[in-house]
Amino acid sequence: MTDLAFEFAPVGIALLDQRVIQRCNQQFAETFGGDSSSYVGLPIAELYPSREDFQRIGDRLRQPDAQSGHYNDERIMRRRNGDLFWCRVRGRSLTPEHHFRSGVWSFADISDDRPVVSLTPRERDVAILTCRGLSAKEIGAELNLSYRTIETHRAHLLVKFSARKLPELVAKLTGMPL
Image (cartoon, rainbow, N blue to C red; front, side, top):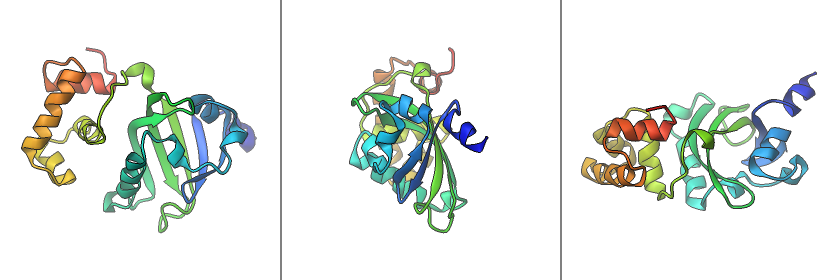
């Protein structure tokens, strides 16, 4: 029964070891494209928009607030055909003292709820932290940038998402109805 629950779960699930896919279910393969056997041994980095995004997420997992062994966020991922999409990612390390040794990760395609807009890696960071409710000063402190730089990135996001004000931007980023 456990294998059936894994294989037919309504969300994509992957077992990772050192950030390399060891096993994944059917929904994971449907989300990213292809069949589940084609993902065995594939570095998860292949499904990120860029090497920089992969590195940034890895760095975030090493932060003190991620030391619990649990992680979740919403980010842009890349399908096998190159298309980008919004994805809700949740993970749990089976070895919290060594985050990347072994873990179970879920991936849910949420692109129907929000548009995929071409963003720079920094704009993605600012967008994610804005959706978490952080102020420009708090985001600046987390990203080691001035709050004025954060405001500039937010201004670019407002234009790209055709939003007039910050609450409208957050609604568009999170897929909430206006």
